[in-house]
Image 1 (cartoon, rainbow, N blue to C red):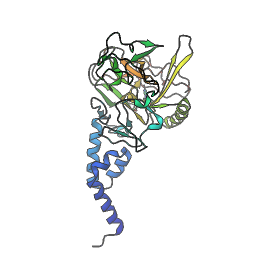
Image 2 (tube, rainbow, N blue to C red):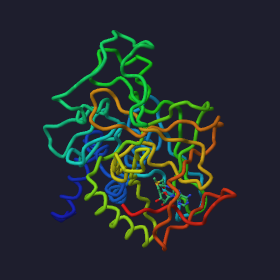
Image 3 (cartoon, helix red, strand yellow):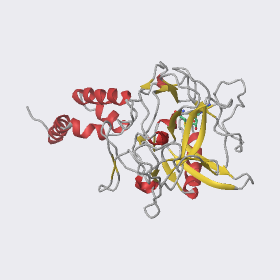
Image 4 (cartoon, helix red, strand yellow):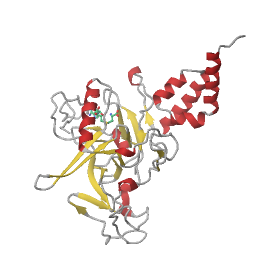
Length: 338
Ligand SMILES: C[S@@+](CC[C@H](N)C(=O)[O-])C[C@H]1O[C@@H](n2cnc3c(N)ncnc32)[C@H](O)[C@@H]1O
């Protein structure tokens, strides 16, 4: 039997991939994995087991609990087993975003191969010149100087403090605090985030993690995302937070894009009735930027969808249709000029 060079090259590529599957396959994007699975039976089997693993934990092992994807939708068009994005538990500067991230390893490797981000802290966002914090000891008490509010922004202990990770004044710094799941919603909302346990009113759930952008970059991306959304089948997760002084003047603006890299908060859908989550900005001592934190607005039952209001303003006349299903639904999603 004569085997052509092309066939033997393909066979050796395939056996190389099969032999090194554990090293290579976890790094592939969903598209690369899908393409690979078409090439041979053994790679199809391996890709399938990688996919089943991904479905079990969207956070790639970076949170305290696994965060599963659930898609019980039989509609062929909506039959995606999971949503592909890179995971970060905290805010990242946009010049430090990894190009690839293994699924199941505890590190995010930056596009600069010398930088490995371990996902546990936001050291990148700490002022190295002016790191300030409390010196209460292991755990802070009522007299801790980091407690309280400043211009409507809550305060917490942070990288500038001497207290330890278990300190009660670090609620928003320890990742996702309650069990949640990412569920494919019926209709046109795409994926949504659901409680996988009872959550009590006032409880902290998670922060909105992603890339911190300059306003110019946020405007550029918003325009691009709007274009993609208008063609359908695209969900952007670019959030602009504006804080105003009592005078009405803007005093703070945060642009967080979780579209390419983010955490579970990127799956929280909008509800015109305000939903069951509230948001609050919290600044950790020593950190340059505050984080946007989500708290339960009311008691939330297991299996209830987690939602909040994306805003009041509907500036774009051709706004995207809203499917929140609340009696107060306004028909379109909020939109503002970025
Ligand atoms: C932050 S993402 C939320 C997760 C998103 N559903 C997904 O599948 O990735 C925001 C996008 O979700 C969709 N979305 C959120 N709330 C919605 C609603 N009430 N009705 C319709 N689409 C909604 C819109 O496409 C919006 O741009």
